[in-house]
Figure 1 (cartoon, rainbow, N blue to C red):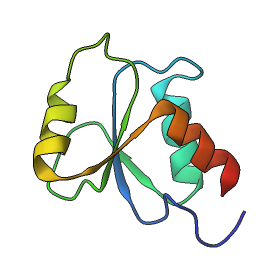
Figure 2 (figure 1 turned 30 degrees about the vertical axis):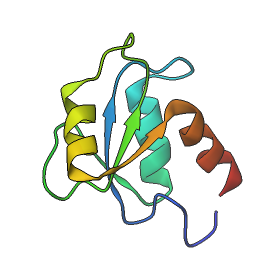
Figure 3 (figure 1 turned 90 degrees about the vertical axis):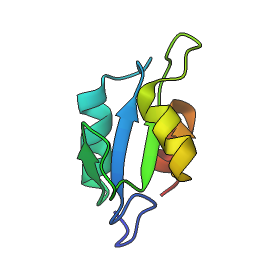
Figure 4 (figure 1 turned 90 degrees about the horizontal axis):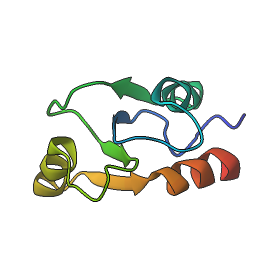
Length: 84
C-alpha cells in the first residue's frame, strides 16, 4: 500500500445504498487507505461518496452540493480503491 492514497487524511461521509458492498465494507476500505468515515455531516467533511438513492437527492447530498464538498459515485470509489 502506498504511503499516500487519494483518501488519506480526508473526512468522508456516505449516502445512499451501495450495490457491490455495504457501507461498513466501503468505509473499511477507505479507513484502510488513510481516510476517516463519519455517519453525519459536520463542517470538517471533505468528501461525500454517493450510492443509489432511487433518483432522489438526499439531505447529505444537498448539503455537500451547497457547501462545495467533493462528491464521488460508488463507481468512482472502486476506481480509487483499485488505482491507488
